[in-house]
Amino acid sequence: MADLQALVDALTESKRDVVEQVTTLTQAAMDQGVNAKEILQDGLIGGMMALGVRFKAGEAFIPEVFMAARAMNVGMEMLEDKLIEAGVEPTATVVLGTVKGDMHDIGKNLVAMMFTGAGLKVVDIGVDVPAEKFVEACKAEDAAICAMSALLTTTMPRIAEVIAACKEAGLTVKTLIGGAPITQAYADEIGADGFAPDAASAAEKAKELIGV
Ligand code: B1M
Image (tube, rainbow, N blue to C red):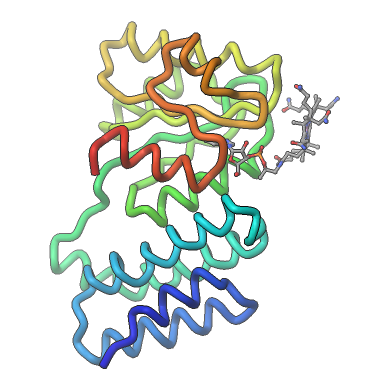
């Protein structure tokens, strides 16, 4: 009997050997004929979301999230062929970047991992990204969400520029913002669709914004 709860626990606890644990448990579930979608949804995504809850509560830290994300990627690679065969596709695409003038990317990278963990396709367009590049990427990728990170009080206004550029380009993307100086009040002020204070909440908010 495949033990998907063990897969969830391995990611939630994210110990040093999490990559090996996830590899072994994913292989075992595959060998036992559990369908890839179930392994992804109830094992890998379930584990990452549970780790997100621990991270939010201050019970897990950045290194654990990085290790779990690596393990999650290994697990997803193992399932890839079966997922393609089964026609399982990411629920939606998120374009994610740090706004122009801002080089901070540690938080953004964590957010990207939690998005992937939540079953979203992430198109990471990097740091120091001008508004027009966000718009181009959202168009090219047919993104459902345009997600922006800003860590400096001086770069916060760049977010409003991206939101304005998206509107001007006629895009119907939902905008999601975050970063140390960002607050819900600021999101309301500039008309962002969503704000999240941390990476785990960002994944929850993204799913809420697109109703999945
Ligand atoms: Co910079 N830096 N930095 N820095 N840096 C801060 C942000 C600062 C608060 C430090 C301080 O003075 N106490 C300060 C900003 C002050 C302000 O504007 N009020 C500052 C400054 C001033 C600067 C420079 C201007 C310094 C200088 O050169 N004089 C310069 C600016 C460079 C630039 O961007 N143009 C600079 C440079 C750097 C480094 C390159 C050295 C390095 C960045 C390395 C990198 O990112 N690759 C760096 C770092 C590491 C920091 C601190 C120390 C740590 C940031 C970090 O990675 N935190 C930071 C001080 C601090 O925050 N305590 C500081 C860990 C990370 C996991 O958290 O990024 O907040 P965070 O992400 C969280 C949430 O905010 C949220 O989720 C994440 C995880 O839970 N989140 C989102 C983030 N993005 C989100 C998006 C979402 C939702 C949630 O939706 C889309």
